[in-house]
Each structure stands twice: as C-alpha cells, then as structure tokens.
Image (tube, rainbow, N blue to C red; front, side, top):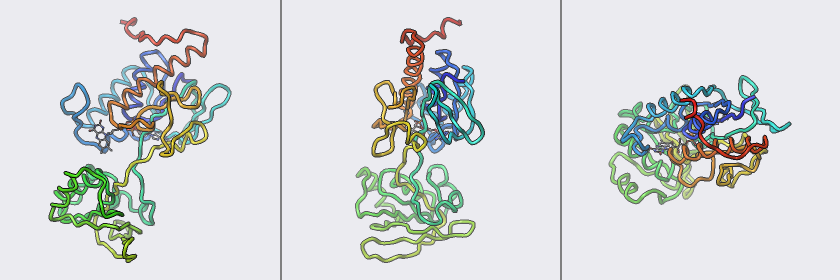
Length: 316
Ligand SMILES: Cc1cc2nc3c(=O)[nH]c(=O)nc-3n(C[C@H](O)[C@H](O)[C@H](O)COP(=O)(O)OP(=O)(O)OC[C@H]3O[C@@H](n4cnc5c(N)ncnc54)[C@H](O)[C@@H]3O)c2cc1C
C-alpha cells in the first residue's frame, strides 16, 4: 500500500514526487512516457536556474532527483482506478497497485483528426510534432493541418526543411499571432489550402497521399505528400477518471486551490487541470501543491495536525 501514487512522468508528476518523498510518503510514480510533453520540446529557455537547457537534460535531471529521494518509478499505463474501502486501486497494463491518495498528472496528448488511415500511418508519415520529425522531410513535401499558432509554427519550421509545405485549414482565417501569420504567408514554399479538411490518409507502409475536402466548393482532391503534421490542439488525458472526478467541458479535471478534485483523496496537477497557462513551471508548482495537500489530507484523516513542514532537513 502506497501513501500516494502519482500518475504521469511529466514535470507535474516529477515535482509531486519530490515533495511527497520529502514528507516521507511512500510514493510510486507510474508514467507512460518519461518526460511527458517535454519529449516534443527542444530547447527550454524559461525554466528558472537554466538560461537554456535541452528538454532531454531537464527530464533526466528531474528523473534523477526523484529517484535519489527513493521514489519508485514504473514505466506503465494506468488503465482503471477504483475508489473503494477507503483506498484507491490502480490497474495498469501489468499490475495492480493500492494507495491512500492519488495525484493525477496525466497532461495532454495531441488531438487526432480521427479519419481513416491516420492511426495506421502514424509514425509512417503521420506525425504530431514538427520539431521532432521535421528533419525527416528534407527536400520532401509535407502538409500541416490546423489554424492556430502551433500549426503556423509547424509550417514555418517545415518550410525551412521541406521542398514544399501545404498548410491546410478548415477556415479562411488563421487564429494565430498576426506576425506569425504574416511570416507564413510570405514563405514562397508554403501553399495555403483554406476552407479545407483532410478526409482520408492513404498509403500502404508509408504515407502516399491524403484526400482533402473543400467545405466551400464541396470538391475533394488528392494531395501527394510524404509527411502529414497534425496540429489541431491538445486534449486532456482524463477519460481514466470520468466516473470519479468532475471535469469541465474541455475534459480538464476541476480542482480547488489545493489541487483537490471532487473526489476526496484524489488530487490533480499540471496540464490536466483547467490552469490557464500550460507551462512547465506552472505544472511543477501545481505538482508541489498537490503533494503537500495529499500529505495534509492523509495526516488529517489519521487525526493528526494538518502541518506540512518539510522534515527532510532533520536527517542531515
Ligand atoms: C512542442 C512543445 C514545446 C513546449 N515548450 C515549452 C517551453 O519551452 N516552456 C514551457 O514552460 N512549456 C513548454 N511546453 C509545455 C509543457 O511541456 C507542459 O506545460 C508540461 O509538460 C506539462 O506538464 P505535465 O506534467 O502537466 O503534463 P505532461 O508533460 O503532458 O506529462 C503527462 C505524463 O502523463 C503520462 N500519462 C498520461 N496518461 C497516463 C496513464 N493513463 N498512465 C500513465 N501515464 C500516463 C504521459 O505519458 C506523460 O508522461 C511545450 C509543450 C510542447 C508540446
């Protein structure tokens, strides 16, 4: 039985792990991908203490710090959570774990197009990260789908690598920063495909073409491309707690100022919450709050005081 199990190995989960360990809570972190969304970022230039640090270095440093504090980390996926008999029972792909409190730090995942062929060709031409996969398309043809800053950014990045880039957007105006829209429109090798939506991704073992539907003319055409970059937003990974904790219309887990969810003993931190600015330091801050609040919750439950003093200095 763990005092707390943290779900997610991103900045929120790692920070919660540090704070939980320093309160001597028996802690386990379970995460699918080490580093969370940081694996898609490159250089981080807004994390205090480092003028610039590669996202991989930052992940490794967080991971090392948490392990050094004695926190167990398991690479696994939580599939189901039960809340019964005063405890939480977590079912993963491989095991079953029990905890007195749970911290949800499952972050965000890219929104999919949900069209035929997309899943089959993911990793074989279909990508959700221009920063990571862009270099594979040197002198090739790529397409980006989306109309916000991420899509504009992706098109801009790819235009410096690929021979040609289509930017496919379902409306005729972009939602991104004006300056970025201007830059994209000025690039000679970016072709705007407006009022259009991809309908099918086609290819056997690798992407060959996509079918694009024009919602004004109602015509469908094929675009022969080597890479398709989907940049239509991110969604909170919260289906897991649909029956346990209240969520908002975007699927984010509603929390109070102590990061407590509507389910007593269950806390949430980072990008899975409705926090307006989804950033590393903010996820870390919420991870710290969630762990301290979980500690306080467990103490109060045992009839002890709710103090949350950091006792780790006593060992030195
Ligand atoms: C391309 C890109 C660049 C960015 N650049 C910056 C930047 O420069 N500066 C900045 O401050 N922010 C940046 N961000 C935002 C930043 O990465 C996020 O705000 C931050 O990672 C959120 O941390 P998190 O721990 O809440 O969630 P995440 O980082 O999303 O981590 C969630 C973790 O939970 C795991 N998980 C999900 N479901 C389960 C499950 N059922 N079982 C087990 N594990 C699960 C995931 O695998 C992942 O490990 C960037 C984001 C992107 C996409």
